[in-house]
Image (tube, rainbow, N blue to C red):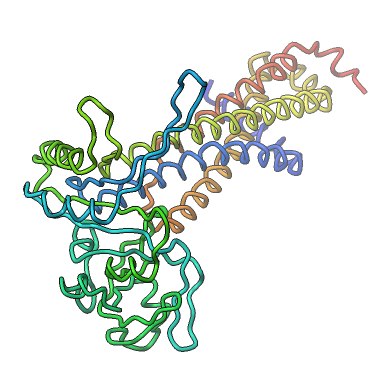
Length: 412
């Protein structure tokens, strides 16, 4: 029995070597299907890990109060948008003064989403996020300083022309110089660099290292615009007090925003882990799409493999007849062709897994996230390849095993 199996494997491998071009093309089709499936699922796992890492860096005991987005309400006149007014600077500062529960409060606003910083003849790309912040923003946002110092309370109140740069901006503008004390241009204004933030890595568009912080009063003077809205970050003393802190903040801010009893909040409070969970949930649609694409590609590969195996049976009819005349049984012939189909699929599967790992590594590098070997997805991909090989090779193998040896030897 064992010798029969070894003989079948040897014959199958020799047959594959004799049709190398056909085997490579079929394996490539299968590898693309596996790469589309396993690679995308691996990349999504990397993105999920990056999301969790970036948001957890803000701390599990951090929440944000921001302006509520426009919602659609259905009334007598049909769908009507309900707009909520922006959170004003006075409301934000009023909250900061009134909130005396345990924790730290910071007030900030977006000055520009696409600013250009300049130092002498060196300019950054126009993709720098500029925030107006107070002295507590660095702590509540999960940053730390690698050089220099934070804003002082007087600098915030006076709207001083000083800035704290993100790590990428400091590297870009000051390649071989100490940035502390240097004067740069932020838009049309001149600002003295007083600090540099420690690198935080890519943050999915939420600041990261391509940022510049200015005193919030300075931004109100020089970056003012209609309906400017302010954001409040609250860092609770510990995670156990999180829900109590949110309840306290909600009550205070409802009073400040003059929400009537029974009315909905005209602001929203989000926790950092809630934002991450929402984004990860949205990735499920991408996962479903990638799975469908991979299955369709593998289905095409299975049909192609079955067609190639049927052609192979026809081309090797005389060989089958000769083997049967020499004593090969139906099961021997069937197993030979099944082995060929499975080997071709596994070669394609290994190539696909390699492509998938390269894709995962690329995404990991892009998001500056740790790469975790997706053993589960790899085993799933190879298991699918085994199933595709058995299903695609079964009918041609059975057809080959049922050939009449006399008729097969006469085949021209």
